[in-house]
Amino acid sequence: MSRLKLLPGTPDDLNRDYLPESIKGSDIVVNENGNNSRPYPERLIECTGVLADGLNDRWYVYVPEKYDGSSAVPLVVGLHGGLMTGWGHSIYTSWCYVADREGLICVFPDAHTERMWTVEGVFDGLSEEDLDGLPIALAPKDYRENHDLNMVRALIEKMQQDYRIDPGRIFMQGMSMGNVMTQQFCKYYGDMLAGAAGSGGPTQPDMMFTEEGGILNYGGPMAIWQSRPEVNGLPPAKIYDEFTVNKMSRTYWMRVNECGEIPEISIVGEDNFAFFRGRKADLVYLDIKNRDHGQTLDEAFLYWDYLFSGVRKTPEGRVISGEGRIPRKGDAFAAAFTEGNGKAWFHNRVTGLSQPPVLWQKCKYHGLNGGTIVRGEYLMVPLQFLAEMFGAEYRPSADTLTAEVILRDGRELQFARGSIVCAVDDTMRQMYCEALHRNGELLVSAEWFCRYFFNLHVSRCNGVTYVTDHFAELSCFMADLIKDILNGSVLPDDYSFIGSCVKRGKE
Image (tube, rainbow, N blue to C red):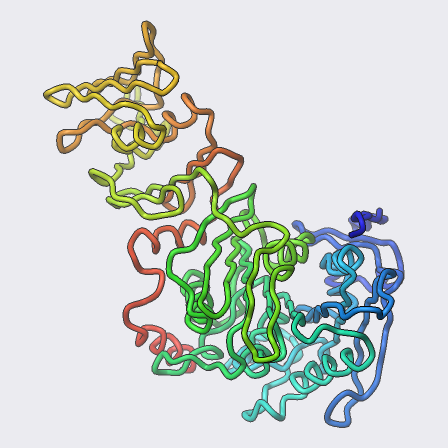
């Protein structure tokens, strides 16, 4: 396996075009809120010809230097975003780098109509004002008449004729509108693929579900990856909020792949992973903290290293989801709490608390003539549970107004109702806020306890506090998923809710 070789580029920071044509065939790179491009790949070949329906199309093929045709290799089909191109997708992703390392082959087709894929539902009911001059290609009612679908399918078959492609290791990945196109291809022709990934935004519900909440799928199960930038946004004139659409997109593949409702969660820096295991295929959900619409330049490596490298489809159509280069495991030590919920997330499972955490504000009153300034806000968690998290001994007093905690390293801690200090052996240390007494039990700030005594990382977002032993930034949609896990509502009990959303979207 070859070592990755990163290529330098010439920055063009003053260029604000969506896809600067000057990049093509050059070493120019541009960056916009993390949507970084790479230098144009020297081995990228531009191709044109008739693939389907008697129409001329364009696509780009990347064959790594190590390919010699002696053995079958994986194929990755990359679908560009709206108003982009196949070559644009090759430079705004790291797929060509992955190809160099792994020896796989990539192909990047152009959408047939003005750089916009012909996809179901996206433009239905939109006015010219909504479209703001965007070119559109309305999908035919019969998917078999959709030229983009026919073209991509024929392109895969052509790649199998021209190169030694492993038929059990064909993958697809799309960004933004390319993600919607990927979902549409999987819906009808997913039997050709072992796995698929999408980034930059979820698919509208009416493409996935009937008005009764049933599944629209003819392609069958496959390994699925969904990347959701935290501040992605949605297309114009859509009634769905991002939380609902994310849940419905995740629900769709959980049902197709027959996934369990409880994933393993791992947060690595700004990457928030949820790994779902399925009876028929696995699902990876990734929410990327502080990310705008688009895809990160490392995403292709994430898809491959965590998921696709361990996936293949048998000739009978069964998906084998082995471990990839990086095991899909949850954080070895992590806990999550949310205000008012008597359950917590700990060691990748749901566990009960003696009472729900309380969100408490540390306030300033003096000199404000009756006013208040909030100086801090902390999640107060039962002290007994915090002690159990770290294998410490918990000794409450008979009246429960004070308590001792003996840490495993021998330090003796004392807490008391209303006191902002913690006695540590024979000295005192001030906490973020005073200890509370609720329902015969002491509660203290989880943030302070975990940081001060164990040097852990604590992240708060969307009403959830996440504690782990490494740098991790909780994102809003992962926080929403954690809430659903703690509430037992990852999958809806009543799928008529999905049907009602589909009906509203069509009105």
